[in-house]
Image (cartoon, chains in turn blue, orange):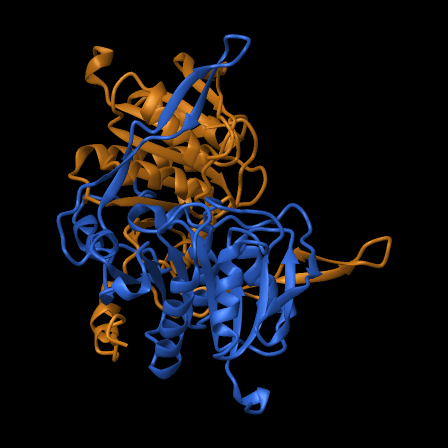
Length: 266
Length: 266
């Protein structure tokens, strides 16, 4: 084994919580690639988007986390995925990681769902600080066999370590729910245009008062064959570069044509 | 007064809660422009990012909300800003609004902070559904006089109603904390490149156990004179077009050059 200081340092987080099968599989797969440190939510934190904890303190508790090489350095954090990565990068890591990896999420993070994803938000925190970052999601809800997606994650991480990472982005990787041998390969994709329709179920509580529960139908309005949804539906591992600068540059010029008047002259 | 069916329908939300001074000022300013309906969080929901409530039901309670023209249709929602807009568009509005407006936020939403903003996430939900949307923020924390920012909001809304709105975006508007008469005008901007450094304060609780509190220093690394930060620092109302498709299109080509191997052939 090489001197540990020569190995890349990889920070791992997720949104399903530090006891989820997906992060266990990810840590096991990356233990062979570099030195791994884990900072993940104590509790499940799906669909928290890019929430951060400001009004309450956050704690980080050392956590017994076993990888193939033995005990890994791990912390359970009382916060969101973004909190975990922020706190780890500021206070928990011995040096700046070479890579921050989030997942493996239990369920896809494709199309519009990227904006609700705690898994992606963890990677975004690293990208903001200029650290290469990857979010992994396995397109199967609930439990499942993460062995294939762990192998895929290892290969993507190796690619990232071997190549020049484009600045200002993270990679959002979605892995189809099919056996490893049936995966066709990797596809660089864009987010599909999709949306949720009839989003809430309306019900009455035992006191006849209405309440609403998020449900709805996911509608893919995109016929492209280079989207994240198309890729995973057709057996490809989808790799979407995602940016954290949200400026819609293409719209700036048309907005400048509007008749904005000076305010003070009115 | 024109027939109410000829007036635009404007849905209003925020993240500071339905009792905040900012949403009161926004509703008052827009009451003159169109028919207003309000769906805002019952509780303050800052920095929730794009969180949505999936595991629990959401309730919407009719709320006594007075505008200049009298009682306005309003609901206090037990959820996040994104929940409010999702629920309102699906269940609470009489027809699809012509415009969805969020704010006026107590404090700026500029640069990287856009991704943490509940105010922006409310507008994003509308943009996903193809409805023109605007997020307003007043660059002063806590209480303050929202009279000037209300006047600014009214003018921006009128511009949006009078012009063709670019598809797939929302407008993120930040209003400087200076008297109305000193505002220089409107500037179409991009998000500044900035980040938070030394993000957490480490402390000991009464039992000598460590805890962390988010604090940190905001560092603007961007010398551009067309950014949101530059605009508000120099007396301009900043208008940034923001997109919800997060694909980093410019990075797709370079990623395709990496030596991605077929998985099944290995």
